[in-house]
Length: 269
Figure (tube, rainbow, N blue to C red):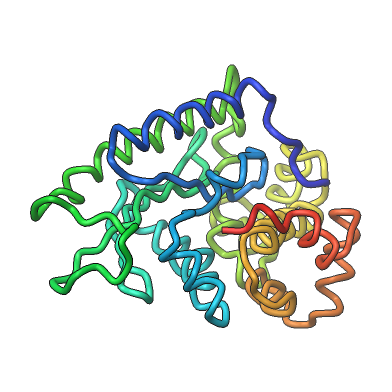
């Protein structure tokens, strides 16, 4: 089971157009974390380009990467309608999950704002004109996230089968730990043997192949958007042995983790 193919150009262009038009209307900068790494968005839409964020990302040891690519993604599971979060540097923004056919496929960010009582530390941070201004935009950002999900699916749902969506959602939610067929069986309410047959029928691959592929999709995402050490990326998807992780990644993706990162270095968040 290889990594998913990029979205058709028409779907990608529709998402780019939506992000480009929505940001100025909201008065916020929009960027999208693509969980599946299928969108192929231009670099300007993969990260906030303001000087305040860029300078701190470049001068610290992965604090922003860990927060933006790990902590916020975990929090998204409990904030399906969007929420305001504050990064380690005191900057605030709205985050809203992007779902397609019931599966998390991305996370939309809208910012970057300064809500502190002191003057903003950087001139390019957005200072809301009145209290509650950013909160008012949460449902609007959520609406954009919903529209991205619709455009992501295109003419047919990306994961048309509800059981397939449930399995993939469970694997993404448990990405940091080893998962067995028994675990999946408990999640979907079937026997272990029946679950193994269902997974093979739905995905055309064995359960072990499917579990491994989902973990490598997430690893590819982390490699592309962060500066985290390769060993840490492996640990975040359940592989504590860095060498073993590298071998599995190369088997699934066709290149080593380091080569993959080098090929996507311009897409980092």
